[in-house]
Image 1 (cartoon, rainbow, N blue to C red):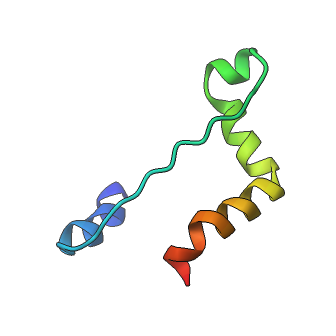
Image 2: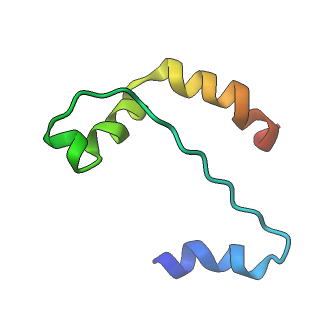
Length: 62
């Protein structure tokens, strides 16, 4: 399954992967310890996703 996702990128010599690190101020609990809280914070915040797409994402999808 991973090969099916990665192989098209490997086959294109000019493909570029970009990673964005996002930091949320979250309380310290079990969810934040395992990284679950950060994933939930991103998915739960429509405002964050909208702003992220306006500031960063549109240059890749326009």
